[in-house]
Image 1 (tube, rainbow, N blue to C red):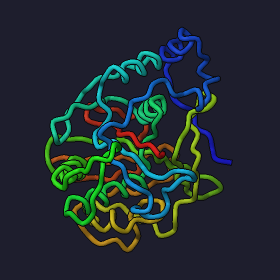
Image 2: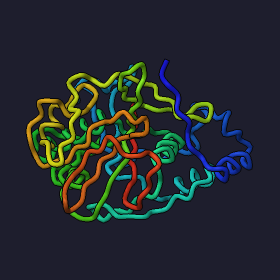
Image 3: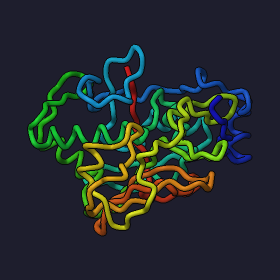
Length: 287
C-alpha cells in the first residue's frame, strides 16, 4: 500500500472549508474538482511520440500547459473555496504573469481542484525533450484543438523552462521522497483523499539513478533524451552545466526545477513548505 502524507493546511484554511460545508478530513479526490481551467492553448502530445513510463490505461494523449498557472476568474473561484490567497507574483521568460508564493502542498491541491495534476519528473522530461525536437523542426506538435505550434513558439516555451536568463522562475514537480523499509521511494501522481495527499505511484528509486549532486554539472540534453524510467538523471550521464541536487533520505524533500541568469537547477531535496514569489506550477492532464 502506498504511504499516506498529510496535506498541510492552516487552521484558517480548515475553517474556510467548514464555512463552505466541507469537513477537511472528509474530502475525497473525486469530490476535489471545484472548477475546470480548460485546456485552450495547451500542448498536446500523443503517447506514441513519447517514451514509455507515462501512458495511463485508456488515455490517448498528454496535455500540458506551456505556462505556469496564472490568476484568472477560474483560479479565483478555486482560491475562494480552498481559502487560499492566489495572485500573480512573478513573470516568466516570456513576460507572462504567474502565481507563486505557494508551497508544494498548496500547488498540488490547486491543480487537483482544477481537474488537473502537477507534472511528475517523467512527464516534465518528456515535455522538455519534445519541445527541443519541435524547436528544431524534427517533429511537429499541436495544441489541444489541433492547431500546429510553430518551431519558434516551441523554442520559446523551452527557453522559458530551461533557459539560463532572467528572471528567476521555478516550478514544483509532483515527486516527493520517502524512506520505507530502508529504501528510498519516489512518490508521484498524488490525489487528494480524506484530507491528505496520497501518491498513486510509489516506487523504489531506480538503481541507475544518479545519487551524487553535481553543482555543476550534468548535461541537460542527455538528461532529457535519456532519463531513467522514472525521469531522473542516470549514473552515467554526461557532464554539463545543469546543476543537480540528488534525492536525499530526510523524508522531507520534493522536486522542483529552477532557472535564472546564473544557471538551471534540478532540485530533488527542496523542502515542500517553501514558498517564493517566482516559484509556481504548471498543469498536466491525461485524456
